Image (tube, rainbow, N blue to C red; front, side, top):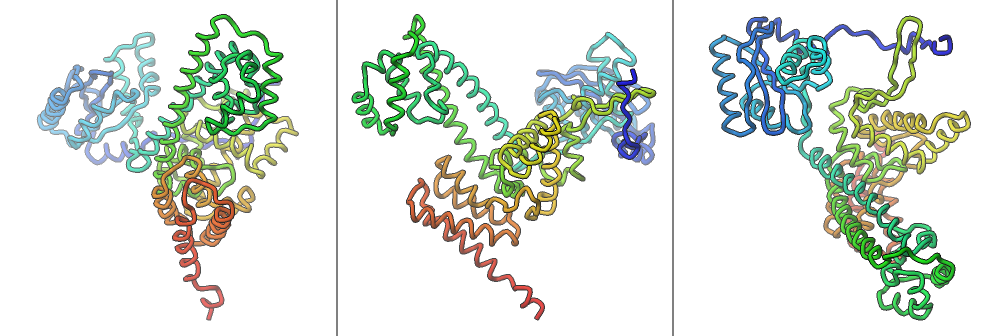
Length: 521
C-alpha cells in the first residue's frame, strides 16, 4: 500500500468549488421567485421525443408526453407550453434538452425559435441523477425526472453556437478526416491484394503511394512474369507513351525483383481486378480530399488561426482542424480552458492517504479537439526543432512517448492562445526564425493545383490577418519565392503575375510606417 501513496504539492491542488456549474441559475431564481420558475425537460430520440413541464420545486405542470419531430407536432408542444405559462402565471421557463448526438437539434431549434431559453444537459449528468433514485431502471420518464434534478443543480448549461466560417471549417475538416481514414483503409486492402499477385513488389519503392510509376506499372503488368516478358525495352517504351518518368535504376530493380519473386497466388486475375477497383476508389477519394483542402484554405485565411502557420510544423490542415474544433478564441478565458475542454490533464483518485494524482487522461472530454491538439503535438515533435529537442531530452529521461505528445500539445496550446488572443507574431524559440505564412499558402495552393484566382484572393485575405510587424518578413519570403520561380519556371500557377500585387501591398504598408527616428523627431 505504501507504494501507491504519492503526495502532491499543496500549491498544485485544485480549489474546491461548492457553487453550481452555472451561477446564472441562482440569480434568476432570486429575481423571479421559485414559484414563477419552470423547466421543460426533453429526452430526444431520432424521430420523436419524450417531454414534460415542471416548476422549480418539482410539481408537474404538463405530464410526460411524446412529441413527433414534425413541424405541426413541435408547434403544438410550444403552444401548449405557452398556454401553461399563462395559466400558471410563470415568468421564466427554461427548456432543458439532453444532448443526444444530433437528435436533440429539432426540438432545441423549435423552442429557441419560439423565444424560449434552451439549455443542454449532458447524458452523464442525467445518468448520475437517475441512478440515485432508480438504480437498474432506465426509462424515458425516469430520464426526464433526472434531467429536472440536474437542471435544478445547475447542470443545464449554455452551448455556445459555432456559426459562420467556423461552422464551415468544422463540416469541411470533419468530412476530410473521414475521407482520409477511409482512404487509409483502402490502401491497406489494396496492398494486401497486390501482395498476393506480386509478392514483395511494394518493397521496390520507398513509398508505394508517392511513387508516380509504382501502381501504373503494376496495373500494366499484373504478375512478375508479365513484367519480365515486357523487358527493359517494352517497359521504357510504354512509360514514354504514357508520359511517365522513371529512372533506369528503378527499372533494373523491378526486373531483378521479378526474376526472384515468388509465384502469384491462385486466382491472380480476380485479385488484380479487386485491387485495381480499390485503387480507383482511392484515387477518387484523393481528388475529393484535394478539393476539400482547397475549400479549407479559403475558410482558414478568414480566421486568425492562419497566424499559427508561422510555427514550423503547422500547415493548413493542422490549423484548419484546430480552428474547426476550437471555434473562436473569444470562447476561452485562458489556455487551461482549451486543454480542459480537450481533457489534456490526468485523472486523479484520492481517498484518505492514498493519492493517485497522475492517472491516465480523463475520459470525459471533447475527443475531436483532443485529437486535433495531439496531431499537432505529433507534427511539432517531428518537424519543429525546438519541440524535437525537448522531446529528445525527455526520451533520455525515459519519459513515455504518449506523455511527450501531451506535453507538446499543452505547450503549443499556451503559445497558440497568445497568438490568437493578441493577433501577434510569436516570439518564441520554436519559431525563430518563423515560417512565412504567405509562402506556405502559395505552396499549398500549388500542390493542390488551385486556380490562380483562388490563390490571389486567399493571399489578399490572409494579408489582412497579419500583424504589421510581420509584413517585412513575409515580403522578403515572397520575393525569394518569386525569384526562384522566375529562375526555374516551375509550378502551375503564374506566380510572376500573382505575387507582385501582394508584394506591393506589403512593401507599401511597411514603407508608410514612420521609423523610430522619424517618430521621435
